[in-house]
Image 1 (cartoon, helix red, strand yellow):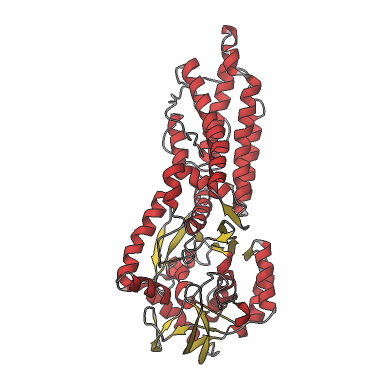
Image 2 (cartoon, one colour; image 1 turned 90 degrees about the vertical axis):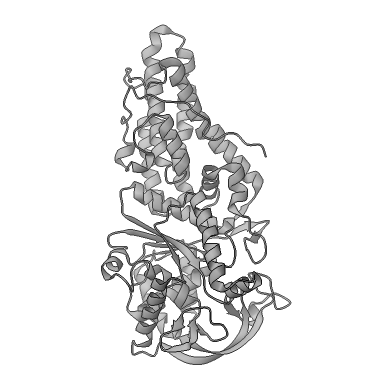
Length: 513
């Protein structure tokens, strides 16, 4: 694991168009994990960025009448704008066109070229190539009509001299690595795929191109530019300081989690560790591959024009509901289909009618019965099982996030919402408040309810940072929810009596379909 820092990465995304919700699906879930580790008091390094080289990017720029650099500069602004609006709290945004990255790619290539094992050699390649995938296919791989199996667009026939990486020499080392580190690829179904792929034998792969010039030149032959994998994958060690800061690199590498989509699993779990082994660098601790996000049963794709811009949803649902939906709706690791109706239903059921309504009711009663001030709990045992429920939920939440079981983590938090709703129905503070001699009981029940909301404000911070802070403010608490640290911050009884609350606007207004 990362020696001193929890280091988590998204893939770097192709800069051939603006982001769609498939990219944001990865970014939001990865950000959830990073934020939770910060909440635990850990040092965290969260990396994202854009892959700005290659034929696909060059062609996209040409179609816009721009140079490739002009095009990628323009798109960087679009990507950063989306991540800012989605509350993606990355620590570094890497672009493969940066000088620091050229240095790291050159250093990695040179280390492999000079390792004395002839792991890189010059060869000839010809085959059927999908520009959108940046990958070659055999006839058997293609759909009828010579169409790419992923993008359903015609492939092109390419012929050129390339340098190759001798992946075939790393079968045994990769098998030994994964047998010694069984959690290095997750979930288990993806690990099984990787092991099967390696055991079936590996083919050497092309690492350079001469048919275009938009890329990092090879250090020993500048007529070739690095093709995809020795360029794009190297971003993870570039940002960690591989070619620029040896001390920083020792603190950060290996990365704890590469968070990726399953479509690029082979490159991250087979190509990348072999490349690192060849250069004498330790492989990442874990590659976590999530499933496809589909619309109408088809994989989200800019190339197929099925991409939905995140702002189309954020403008209607708000950023908190947007983030909650993608973490809660789909089991991380499984495929999931998006629909507007499902998002409305999840928003109204869990947020508007669930947490939002709960907070509104408790704050309204505090305002009506105690002028907004949190009362002291005077009746022993009036809190019932809430201390145990919140403690148990927080423990399950922690275990699930550490295991990257993100949907289950949210379900654990929502068990507090469900129990607190049940507790209020059982205790009926709105009824007992009518009896003057039961004021102490009302105070104790509402203290327990407000304390449960305080704990919820802490626990939802990694999921919905903005809503967490709004709830924290409505509860009249000092500082911010983001400054809290678990498990100390979720211990029962931290809410000070006399704290002045403010009902404010609804956390999650109900939405019509």
